[in-house]
Length: 207
Image (cartoon, rainbow, N blue to C red):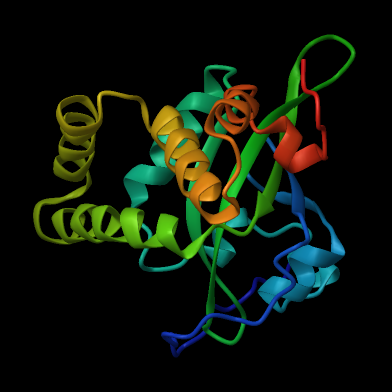
């Protein structure tokens, strides 16, 4: 099977995309892409035929530290849904930032068959806060190795944030979105605490 070749030139430029859309993809348990919706293909600049059968990391941006994806896979393998803020790479070498809600797909026997990721745009203020952390983790990874980056990340979340990565992402996104939209804090925070279902699925009264 022909594999996608990453772009040779990485541009410090955001791709133009419809930020009102939800980017959706489905993978098997190994992260192989099984489905990509139109919003996904248009944003990453690959068509569905090119994406199907490829590992999802074909759109991984080199600015992303590996420890962020380790946290993701560790959670999913434990059966936990997960949220992450991710910088992705397009065919042309451009980037786009998203918040992702990962859910676990199961068959009628309750066996895990894969994962569904739904992604939406994030406020610039979220990127401004998380990008320096990712850069630090990436620098540690390059100089000291992935294990050192992982240990720093764990200590940072414990000592400076006091939350898990998933909780950190949800709270950061909630706070910055509330500021941007000037909504009532109590009402909006309650929505985010429901797992962002209202945001990704359009639910106004999540249970």
